Every structure is written in C-alpha cells, then in structure tokens.
Image 1 (cartoon, helix red, strand yellow):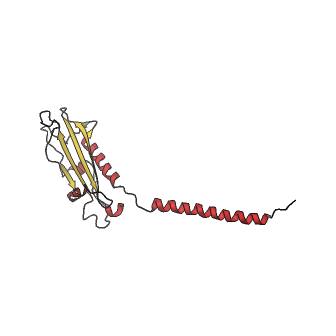
Image 2 (cartoon, one colour):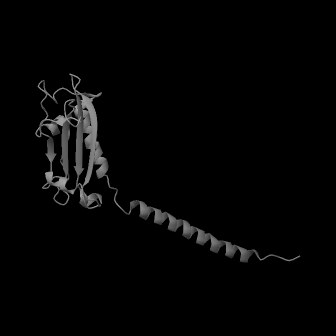
Image 3 (tube, helix red, strand yellow):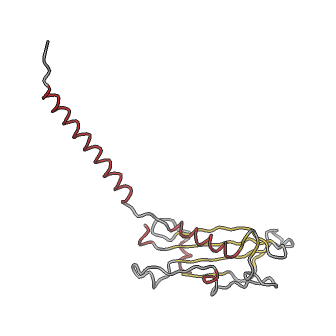
Length: 180
C-alpha cells in the first residue's frame, strides 16, 4: 500500500484557497466601484416631485381647489403666489454659485374645453403661471447628461360648475454640476 504525502496536498489546497480569496475580494471591490463610481442623478425624481406637489395644490379628487380659479373663471393663482401656495421653495445649497442662478423652473398652463371651438379640443385662457429660471426652458429639446432635466405631465380636472380643464405642468431641474 502506498502512503500519501499529506503535506504536498495541503500546499496545493492552500494555493487554491488564496486564488479563490483573491477572486472574491476582486469581485467585491469591482461591485463597490461600479455602485459608488458615479453619482446618482435624482433630477428627474425632483422634477416629478415638484409636479406632484403642484398638482395636489391645484386639484384634489378631480376638482380644482378653491382659490385657483375665481367665480368669473379667471386664475387667482399667480406667478408670485404659486410657490407659497403650493409650499415649494427653490432654495438650494451654495454649490458652484447655484444661489446666483436659479436651478428650477415650473410652468403651468390651464386649458378649458370649449365645445364650440373649431378643433374641438378647447382653448387656453388666462396667462400661464411661470416661476423660476426661464432660461432653462430652451434646453428641454436637447438631450445629454450636461443639460437640465425636463418633465411635462398633464391631467384633467373639473371646476365647481362642472367645466372641464386640462392642466399641463412642466418642471425643469438644472443642477448639472453635482448630479451628472
């Protein structure tokens, strides 16, 4: 009967053990670099949150809230009071002079359905409500990570008299230096 060399087999197993440990450690380092290597871009999420906040401020349960449209059908909501009424703030940290150049823009358009309109879709009324940095609007047509993120949504609602409206909200978030 032949005797096995136990010391030789132990040396071979220890080499494989270190190779496996090296592969596992390299995989963990690789996953950490991939996960934390790029900052997470939250601008689209911020824009959607602003739209949701504005929509909740304007309409509830499918009806326009009081103080948005008056009895004559004119907007009471203005460029000046939209932020305070909807509990929004455009304040940002002072990162790369962000405080000097606003990082947000919102635009709200109200369209009333008009059965007598030639196109059948309705006509807009009043002025649109605008707040924030209007220069950001020109970048909405451009794509790329160094451009602001633009999100636009619309919803249908009714007023007290049962008149139908389409409300379109556009929200733009810049913050390109930090989020991309």
